Image (cartoon, rainbow, N blue to C red; front, side, top):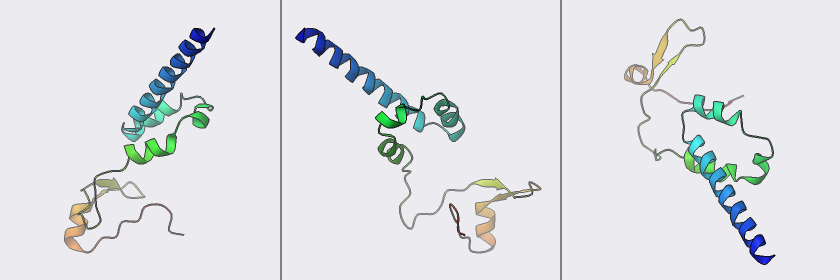
Length: 102
């Protein structure tokens, strides 16, 4: 009986480790792919897997305070043109705001 319990616990530990590795790998993917993967994750997984520590590690980035922001390009709100950070920064100071400022 004890051997069956140990084998069962070992199996649960291996499955939990595989699920953690899978979720962490998904979090390292580009946002579109991550969203597609997460849409298939069952709700109960959010209760038993350590999503927050994985997310903070996978999306931490490499920038430090004072580093130059990486160049990127985004469409304007009306989608008439695109704006590139480096071209805007060359003309005037730029402030990047992430999230809501209201």
